[in-house]
Length: 430
Length: 99
Image 1 (cartoon, rainbow over the protein chains, first blue to last red):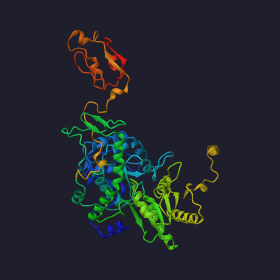
Image 2: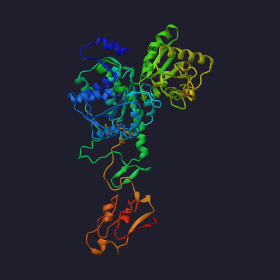
Image 3: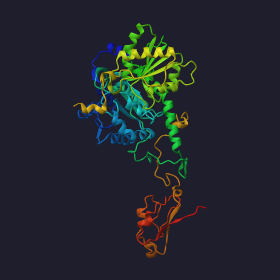
Image 4: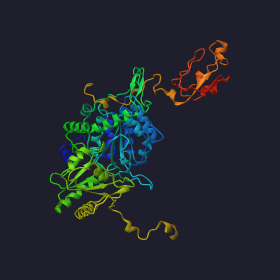
């Protein structure tokens, strides 16, 4: 945990005790975001409440647009971004799902908008607690997706997100996610950087479009046809060419993400693995726990115990979920024997998303590792050290016997505590 | 910088320009086209710039405010609104065979 050590050695007046939500709000303030439009939803609300506070105190010169829904919030963000302004918002769960319709527009129009997502499970039934179901649902719309593991990382990733999004080689929207409550409402020391240094790292946005500049005869959302459009004024791309450009920009953004991460690390002295994933004790490991966010954090504790038992185990905590860094993952896993995946999500009807995506990414690799996926912690059910050690033991045992399948395996279920529960008779017992 | 740009880096979202036929030759969308019966058309009969309801209501701005009113059939989508709005029923929608 290099970042924690770094904090200890740099105790000064810039160190604040902040929740994950407030760390995100401070990042927006220091990134000098010009327009924010948001709608409140648990557990994200404190982000935009804090931003509104900054604006009213004069600490942030920005326009806060109040709207009636998340769909409108992102619509306002898209329009504001098209005027050349730096734009951001924050949301959770069903808020993100209501934004869904606008998400591909933001990506297709290549608008560098940042969303901070405090992850929360999707209904029904109602739950305000964390899992990654909301985060994974937007994986196919063309956004860059990051998952954070601590509050300092939320703060730092926001600056990197703006820098990546606004790079002329990229121009894509980015979502910075962190576990609801586990990070969003938990206080941790966060080092706030000096404003001048931030300004040096993150210069003002030079957008490819500025609708407020009337000397430019430009618009967004062109009408396209299945064909390349030929006319007297020149030839313009069809839908297919636009979507090719979007996909190729996403693919090539992985190198730029690493570049920006390294630049940030050099400037501020904090790094998060290689900017794509973080590793813990993987140098001599033959068995790897593969997880994201809060689950990977818990695994950091669990491997201490597993190491004492003599298992050479390490963790790969995925930071960049989209674009999927399949090349880096193939490189990393080519010499690994066993991988145990813990998903705080399900691709309903199949299995955990991290699990099946890793299997597909490693397809065709010689001597590819054994992979077993577990489902953990849906709807905020605690993911304990015991769940992780149980999972690792069960998986290693199955690998030995050649039993592992794609069938989902749930850890931490408490069906036994329901005794003779049967919904059909639930209300007849008085 | 421009030289090192890859092909996909040259295609972003912001290319819409206010030009004729932004969405291509939309005249191919419908087989029926408006034909004006000049013996009924008000500006033709009065020889004065008058009426022009067809020009006013055309959602695609393909009708010119001239005497007689000219219709850009290459971009007319054939919606028939001009026929509906013409007060003297001078416009009919007729099948136009492409050559």
